[in-house]
Length: 87
Image 1 (cartoon, rainbow, N blue to C red):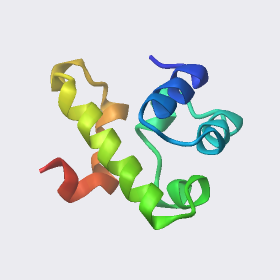
Image 2 (image 1 turned 45 degrees about the horizontal axis):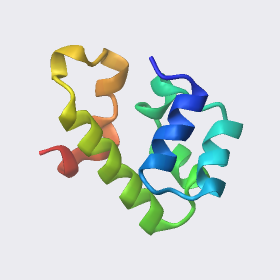
Image 3 (image 1 turned 120 degrees about the vertical axis):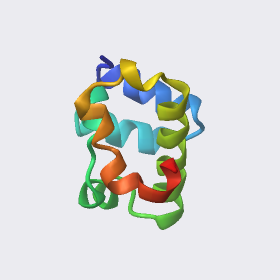
Image 4 (image 1 turned 30 degrees about the vertical axis):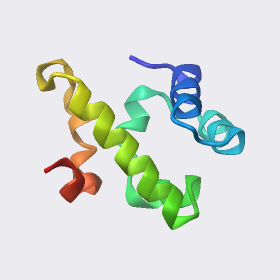
């Protein structure tokens, strides 16, 4: 499971700004939290629509890279707000 620093590093590698990465870290978003963020959480963390959509795409790609048998039930909850991106 990713800790807060792992999440920050992942987002940085995906090209998100230092400000965005620091915001996730300051809110203590770890791996479990990353894959269970609600729409309201995302609106607070990423106030710009473009950033939220980019984030959803990045998470969808990350989920597709992993074999579903390796994902925990908490990770699957991301489908609640990812919807069409995962199909």
